[in-house]
Image (tube, rainbow, N blue to C red; front, top):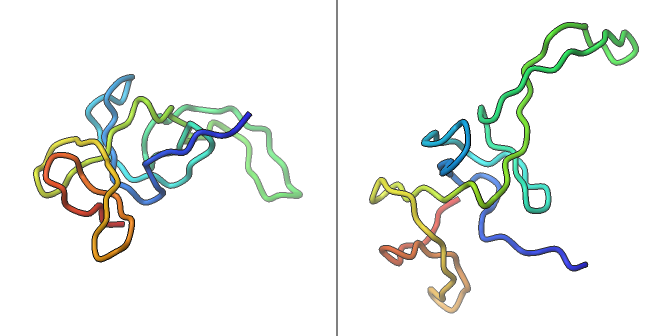
Length: 107
């Protein structure tokens, strides 16, 4: 099955629109298929065993888990609102644009 493309990219500032972190903003650090990891969002506690070969101390560790892309929207810094993304051309290059004000999405 062909993987769906996404309009969100690593480094984009996003806002969570549903779930336990609703209303929080952060930057995308990694995209994995239709899910992504956002800095300091969706933190869970994991009980880990110590592993001296890898230098891991045991205990309870907070870890960032992935969030589905449908629960995120890009944050438009110029209008201070969440927004959608469209594609358009600026100076003969295909770029991502905010739908509300047609400004280019900066990385």
